[in-house]
Length: 243
Image 1 (cartoon, rainbow, N blue to C red):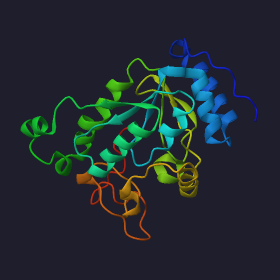
Image 2 (image 1 turned 90 degrees about the vertical axis):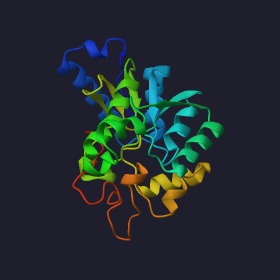
Image 3 (image 1 turned 60 degrees about the horizontal axis):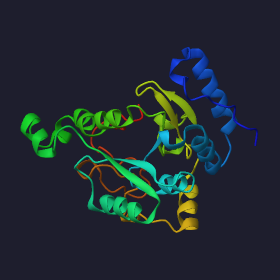
């Protein structure tokens, strides 16, 4: 492995944009092709406790990976109020069995309060607004003051993610974004889970290869795109977190 260039994270946000982006691009290029464990180790070394790990609890790979490097690492879970019970169970098992600290990001309004203001089933009438209120805005508030966040984005998941870098500057949230699993295939995901005997979200085995909020997620038929079950029936493909 060619060592990734050193990164001074103390003033990264103050650098000229071109200099900052060039530095992060060089790091991303140096990490390309390296195992997720090496990417995670670089992230832990660069940011320490000032990094937070996003986890949808479709799986617990990232929490497991970083718990070994930063015991008690903060794991961010977007509590939308619409999750499947199986997803909440997976969160609880991860919190019990792994050396992590689950941090729940909550919307400003409860589901009942949102219904009172916007009407019931906003997710059916305006899914973009619902996602903003229950995911995008809570995430932005949870990331304030952080130096970096880690996500489970993988290039094979969708055309919108096909060119996702390993390391980049997140302009929306003004911090570094790291995607350690970006080059992983579905087989890589399964191999890691099986090799470490990790807790599983039961929905995956039931035909849900991409899991979001219960009202906006359906099973996927054999041969369908894995994300076909998300916001089925409209042209929405992303919640807005990674776009």
